[in-house]
Amino acid sequence: MNIHEYQAKQLLAKFGVPVSKGIACTTADEVGKAFTDLGVPLGVVKVQIHAGGRGKAGGVKLVRSADEAKKVAQGLFGKALVTHQTGPEGRVVKTIYVEAGSDIAREMYLAVVMDRSAQAPVIIAAAEGGMDIEELAAHKPAAIARHRVHPVKGVQGFQLRALCKHLGLSGEQAKAGSKLIQSLVTAFMALDCSLAEINPMIITKQGEVKALDAKMSFDDNALFRHKDVVECRDLNEEDPKEIEAKKFDLNYIALTGTSS
Image 1 (cartoon, rainbow, N blue to C red):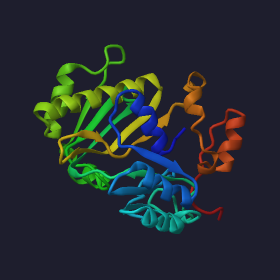
Image 2 (cartoon, rainbow, N blue to C red):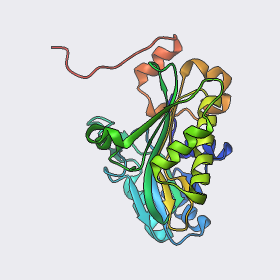
Image 3 (cartoon, helix red, strand yellow):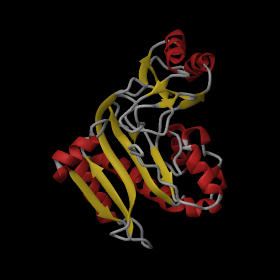
């Protein structure tokens, strides 16, 4: 099961992952009010769909006033946003997240994923983050560090130090980075995730280390243990055929192509 960015941030914040303040909205008027309530000079309007590539598709906009935020939202609500992960039909925007803007100095990539071949969670990190992590993985695989997490002992101190060194973090930023990585792993294990991704993880010009974006997926077989996670489910983002299949505990995988 997947959830929206704002929901992932709410969950991760409970485990100590630093995130920016934000407000989820379902109308353009709410978006304008949210900007005012945040009380910041710069805000970010983000469409909430279960797909990556929102920025490239025009679903992430910087705004500097409540009126601008409302106007941007009016152009996004009800629109089918098409990204490389949605298919040509796109996903209709029904929720927008308004977040306090960050003064970004550098972007990185961090994720914890369940690796079946390793039979354990694996931390993946890269000193380059943002929208082109897939391209980085394809063309510069050495830029990506991977550390297997012990299923009982968890992430070890030497791994945290190695990860921070790979990410180019030192001093106080290394301490903050270690804490963030540890918090992400703890959340991953506690919530029975299959993926917990921060892309990008950023350093601000003020020296803060935090999650600018977040994506989480969960093991369906463990959801009975996490009612708070189940409440985050958005059926509007799921294939109706998959929803029907889940009622009968069936795995349904839609394929592309034609019947001819």
